[in-house]
Length: 101
Image 1 (cartoon, rainbow, N blue to C red):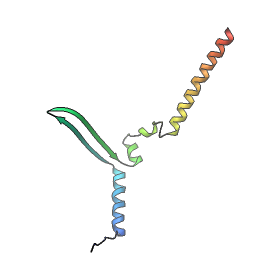
Image 2 (image 1 turned 180 degrees about the vertical axis):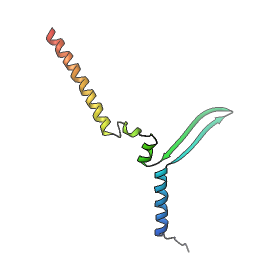
Image 3 (image 1 turned 90 degrees about the horizontal axis):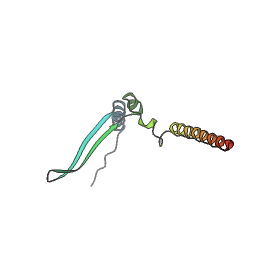
């Protein structure tokens, strides 16, 4: 006969408290994996993982997602505006060249 343990509200609260603390304080997990054959290093993988809330990450100076064009619509808009200005300038130069001929 197998017994199943029911999750009580206190256990759920404890899990929520732990998650809140981790996100509030942040946690770093680091490790290195090396593959060697006969003292010759073939591969090294360095793993660095930070788990924190967005607010905590920004407090630590980590905000790479704000400048990533895949994650930030503002970066896309800024990029499109710059490209649009460059194209307008190019078009103006070409039109002036045609008029001068």
